[in-house]
Amino acid sequence: MALGPRKRQNIRNFDPSSVMPRRASAFRAAIILSVSAMPVAAAAQRPATSTAALQTEAVQRTREYLRINTTNPPGNEAATMQWFAHILQQEGIPFDTASSAPGRGNIWARLEGNGSKPALVLLHHMDVVPADAKYWSTDPFAATTKDSIIYGRGALDTKTLGIMELEAFLALHRAHVPLDRDVIFMATADEEAGGEYGAGWVVSHHPEAFKGAGLLLNEGGGGDLEPDGRAQFSIEVTQKTPLWLELTATGKPGHGSTPGPASAVNRLIRALHRLQTYEFAPRVVPAVATYLQAIAPAMSDKWRAGFADPQQLIADHNTLMELQIEHPDVAGLLRNTCSITMLQASNKINVIPPEASAQIDCRLLPDQNHDAFLKELAAAINDPAIKIRTIIGFSAAVSSTDSPLYRAMVDEIHENYPNASIAPAVSTGFTDSHWFRDLGVASYGFAPILIPVADESGVHGNDERLSIENIRKGTAMMVDLVKRVAGANAVP
Image (tube, rainbow, N blue to C red):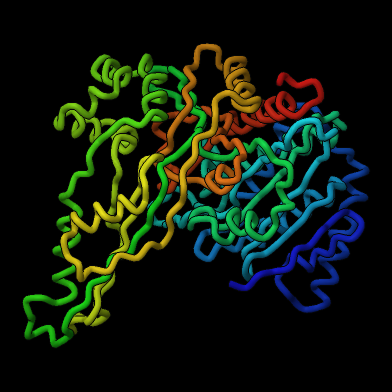
């Protein structure tokens, strides 16, 4: 890993070339000249602080952000780090940048409060998952607008959230809002691949970035708009933990025309079949029980009683199978799971390879001990010759619902959606919040948007999109939320 130097930047000494790829000196000088002139233009226009102006700015910046391709791999977050650096420079806000490897940028900035309360971190990640343009109705990186909806990879995960957080951060700065706590804006790399070059790297190498932090707002929750018009909001307080594993089998190599009975490929297939047909025991952990009971009133007649008493969902095998078909996200919260996702063996059709491997994505319930799980997995595979290697494995923690940030989110939702249900949620996926929960920072996943259920498939899927109305209302809610939590005399 090539570690980049930390750079403290501000409006007086910011050098755009320090966060840009190297180019010819004449071109670089032209860029520096144009950027150095930006504060003058900004000063002449005097950025507005009205809600309407912030909303309009958020829509435009969402389009700009989505057009920067930060597909991971390789990431290329240095481009978006540079983009944020220019915005912060225009605003006259000091900031820091640090690259964990070439092209892998991270950026953060801090507005100082009176120090009477722990700092609030506004976190999002700049990288996105790949998008195959063949299966999209628009260019995934063109930020095309159709019917007042913006299409683009990252619209839901999580570039738009980052813009809402940025606008809230800028609103505090522009209006000189007195703060009881520092507010930190942080955009990081590599979340989609585990965060080792992003939030995890910042935690290890730049603890000063989040010094004094006690609260953190990140992705992982938000609002669902049901077909019947009901609104359900979730605030993520914990998550299943990823345990990504590689299984490797070895055997005698040879020619494809003379197969033996115990090749590496055959041994691996046998092990994977055992894993595929193995059923991890279902159980209801307290955080999941709380979540399901909270959303039970909004469920259909078929499932309402089971959600209110989740033990009913796991008491019968057929019920659990039906749940997996109709509500796979909920079924995933009731047991440990493993998905076989990657396979590798010979690179030539007529060669029996000496080695075959598979990578599996296991997600563990928040209270699951990793060592105990690995023992159970090895027993299920039942082949001591299969080597099991851990790729990544994170710890789990639960953030309390009794905190100023959680209460402020509930109040904000109720003010804007009085009839919405709200639940402290457990996520089947993972986010960068775990890096900070490990340090005792109360971390929550929440985006102030209300997404039609039909649009949720865009997360890591095709035609990822978000309405302009959502961006505008979400920006207004985020500004109000941050003021609720960080403003002087905020509700404790």
